[in-house]
Image 1 (cartoon, rainbow, N blue to C red):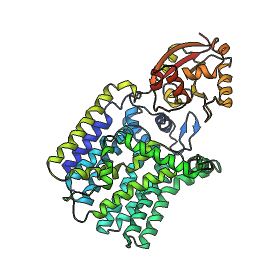
Image 2: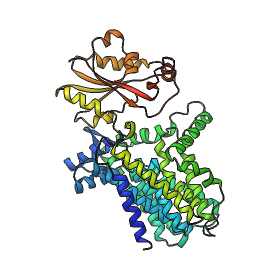
Image 3: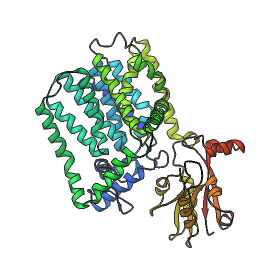
Image 4: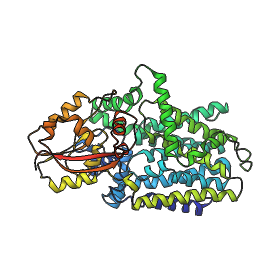
Length: 507
């Protein structure tokens, strides 16, 4: 094993960076975490490890492997948030080691390999998702593992690496569905087409497909048998058809162009400050000190990044964290800019150290509450005042129910009011919200001030009590009707923040 000391040092650095402050649920929180936390806790309590359940409802949204990994962490370390997040923390650190090995294989340059791994660890998007109990970092790990085995096979032509490649994409499939297999296969297939040479034997591919089926099929078969018709229908409708068909309407070109701009913007913000160097990384000339036979490696990395970017640009459902899949390729390409001389080594290390210190500082005291659970204060106020029979709900789009749910054992209702594309209140959702606020029992509702004043008539507001109000930073600023209203009325604070109301119908 080459360079074990360097790999161990990178691994320990990543573990420290990713885990610092991650033991507190409210310090770094994403709504989807509660799905995996509660479902895995249910497995521990009941022993049913086949069917994920959230608040007593069967959860079909994702395959089983990530739930099993958290379940295993709970069995070893107990049911707590650090254990749940430890899966992503460990796999994020191992992903950095894989990036080190890929860079070393492709370019025979240890300095490039070290910088690549550390760039990955300190990229804002990667840092955040390596600290969350969601399956995205696990997906990136298994996809990167598949790529590593392909590169190892390409360099050495050892047939066992083909089987390892197919096993890796099978595990990626069990983490998050078809995308786990599609992306590595597309990357390898397009590179294969560019090289115009025979990379695999038919027998190896056939054996790999059989292995893939043996790994993936059993759990899906059990679910289809236990929930005939329901499981397959839910997965196809929600996880595949909805993600691939929603949003285009009648103008594919406009939707594609909007997606391109969305991910271009996300690439700049979520990979900052390394994104400043990406034009040079993709279009600049490689360093003279890079290994002479590294052209294939650079071509492969460019294909890797381009395939991921263009694939998700074509998918109507847009999420910034989809770009995690190109982070390994971008990290290595960017690191190639710093392998000309020993002096250049200082620049990336200064950037890495500065970002690491910022992340540690944020973990201790998040500036402006950018990464904290924005519903913590609302939950504390409600729990101080509520009785056992009371109901809790969220009333605004943009308030994530799971962020409030994490504080309560009973489900938090979702009665949010929304707006039409023209910026007008959506009548159906407003009626649902008003119906809930007219219910006879005692309840608490967390709602934005602007929605409270827009959706509810004055006579209804007179019957309600605002028990707390506070401001939270917006996740993103939209140049919409609300922005124009705040600007015209000189409510500058509310351009950047939402005022949150906690309301109840009975003292």
